[in-house]
Image (cartoon, rainbow, N blue to C red):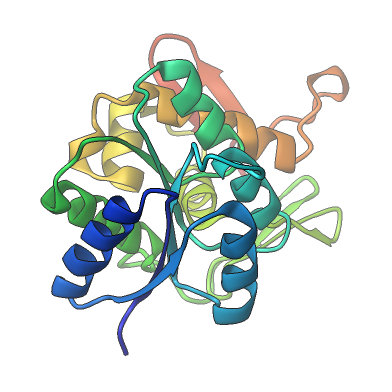
Length: 232
């Protein structure tokens, strides 16, 4: 079955180029020209991935569309923008985007980003399908990709889940920023340390970490990386 990708951009020429290019790679391409159409199409067609321009020329813009999608969907989202500022990239990642591409870009680069996300979504080789992890109020079932806190489901994007799985399956082990990027995102992301910081912060929020009550699952190793608490 073909992977179904929803392309959201207010520029007709960009939509045409992406539809032709992605179709050439064998994807089934859906098109939306504004935020409202994107939300409706995503709900009705359930795409496997969304390529979403940040500046859509009308409300809701791409940031708001991504935020609303994350209220109910884990679909991978690649954001597009003509701007290359780190603050905008961080904002896009913080509200739930899985990746960010600056215009102009080649179809080869976009395809590489798509494939990187698909690799992250795949189950890690060698994972024990029966493995369960329990520490404090956190519970993970690696076979069913279930995460709960205090018995309540934690809704994670594929990238957030893969990052948590990497940390949780290496309890007590310090993982460097570079190692995390290479294992979760891929070798082409080895220098993008801001990705790790943003997603670690999102995980901490969703896991309800509270340093004041000594509730911590992900620990900092300043200047080096992060480690998951030891599991007794």
